[in-house]
Image (cartoon, rainbow, N blue to C red):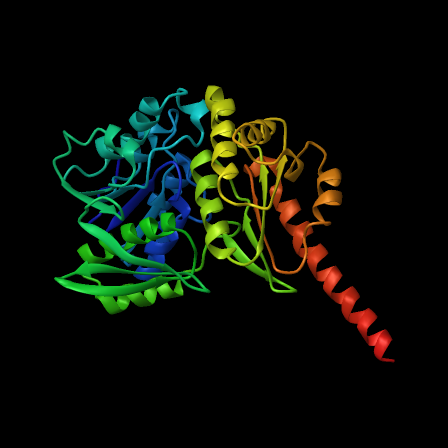
Length: 381
């Protein structure tokens, strides 16, 4: 099958983290104006999935958004089927490090397949705040290079970023005017993801009103920083779809921001596919968590034990951090700390099945609530 270079906007999204969220944000904006938009279902981002999307494109379609996992083996295979005219590289990090040569330069090279094989006259978008994105091979790209950022000056830069009860607010300068936006999800990293969507929509002449509406209607992908209210003024942050050092740090930042005047609990499962970086990556997370003011830390899995060791060495109280390899034992102790006015972050690599722990926390909290309600009714009677 020869590569398609359709006339409609084809957006390819890759990167170490944020692919699915960025894809969903772009799609949400597109839907405010276009009815026929193809999108990668879920996180099916292998070349075979790209082939299926390419085969489905019809004259009636107005755009297609493809999430592309650019590992070493996938590489240029995606682009045998279609050549995006908008390429997004969200960041270059340590996710799947073991499969990408165990070094950041090899990872950047793998992600640079987007630059090499996308439509050479297209638009490439990169994250100016991500220091590793400097390793991307952009020098020979002959199309239009667009940058997004918060800390670093960029073509599309977010200012006045604020946490609200239901998400993030920020402003971006479009057409010489500061426009205010809201996304119903948390974290400055998700503001970066939103900037990619804003930049693409702006280049495609979506109005600020349409962009604002699309972002407001965005629904976060399942188990990616989903904030779930619990009884007794508590909150569960379910971020159990996957994990790497970069995303664990981002999630812990959200825990702290949302956890003001609450008891903060982090439950972190092992981060897999880090290769030779595994021990260092887990220690990096341990050091980071140690200085965040988290009340209790639970780690689950063999590799995650390094998180505990590093946190304690950094000065975190050893009596407040617990390591488990048995989930029942984890849950047995964890339930003692899920109390009123708690905020609990649960995160880990997909194969660690931390969603089971997230579901346990929600279930235990509800059971406790109903039990107390039942007891209070008995006392009244």
